[in-house]
Length: 634
Image 1: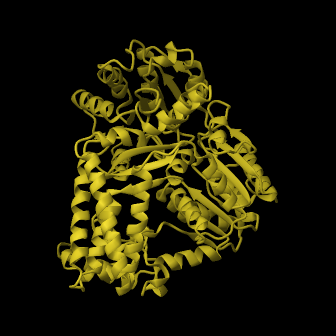
Image 2: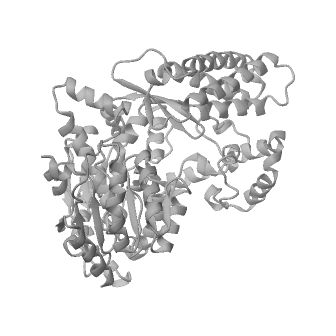
Image 3: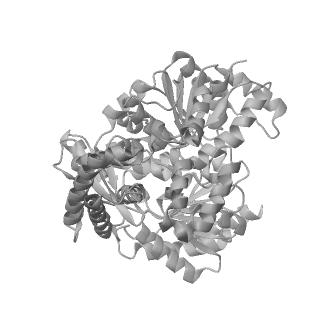
């Protein structure tokens, strides 16, 4: 049987998998993936929600007999693919295929660093947790941090017991033979199919460029959630220095020199680096989003803090190089200080042509970036490193029928493209409401007016609503107004972790969740718990974002139209991700509310509406409320 037949009415899935229903869209995609793998070609597939794209690429991948790497957008999706979907497909096919799950090194216990942490006197406050981890280390086979209870694996403790690309000692580590990362990589090298995430795939590419690969040679690379790639590529093909990296380096140097009493100059340099890092953290406070490096440097203390860090790094590097032969740890710290100093010079030194530089708040500090405005050349090298078939898939890649926004960004002009509509019956299951009478989205009162328009709709739906916002400011204002007007449980992004909020929302059944960009995708709430999705305005990109503005400027310089080539396609793709939260199952029913009046008032509104699944459009609030009550009572 070919891949389409395997997923058909006479195939093993229809015979053995409860609830499996053959779908022509899934079979069409499977046939295209099968052909791409056989011909070692490039394929871009947009598969609407409900297509079953995971099976559509896993079946031909496993049946091909080739070595395949599958990359997903997040670690959660990686676990879902490996532990839920892959076993079902492998069992149904009855193939003795070796599979492996590989995550980044920070997801595994580092035995060497754990031992260092246990004897570090500064770790007394975490002694109970470290003792728990020490006991667990004896029992665990995988060393995956996800096995630990969340209360143990907290953000402050994890850096002490895991490694990063910066601080890993590699083959010089005394615990190398027992290293969990090494064991996971060996399993990946021996596997027929390896499941990774995008961050790890890009990180492996950088290692391969330096002559050290982690992933096995693959006949095919499958990229799920491929719409994330352009933004990720920009970051990974650039340079970055963060206050977290600087703090980690300071801490690791301090641990290494505990046993030495004859390094006063290094101790002094280390103190200066720690103080300079603290000073650099200050300008990141209340930054909110990205800021160009030039503008960031005008913030109080920013320029002097960057200069102080550069000076302290240089001094630490010189001191470390003088004593590097005293221990393996010092040797490695010397290399890290050298690399970090060189990177900081590239990021914060003289601007280079074709690069965009920015600052971004992260945790209690932030990071300084420099990256190519366009990731095309880097992505060419990326694909050349993994010769073979490339399959890119997502529920939202195209803008209407046009893939060029995605393919041009990643130099995929020669790729075959395939667009498959969702098998869900949106005309029956959903309605789209465009509230009349709202002011221009730039009006200061716009968030309040949006909240007013949503209150009667949410009351008619009995809660069960996502309110997706394009900014934190709008989120806060809308949440405040809804809290004062509704009796339903109100959840707001930031009050708890994302997973905890989604869990509370699903269990409540009548909750209202107000959130921003991170909830527009990767959130899957099936059933009656979610029956209304409202979007405050079209996601045209953050005004003043340095990366976005640099791309707009580049398009203008080439004589192009930034709105049609970048801003509108990107907004449509993001909007479709948000809209896609509502219907996740054939039995789901609900309402989409697009509040932005520009959809009806601007010429491009027709393009926006044409990009959405076909469903009846309503403009009368009373009729919308009646439909909600009738649909949800059915």
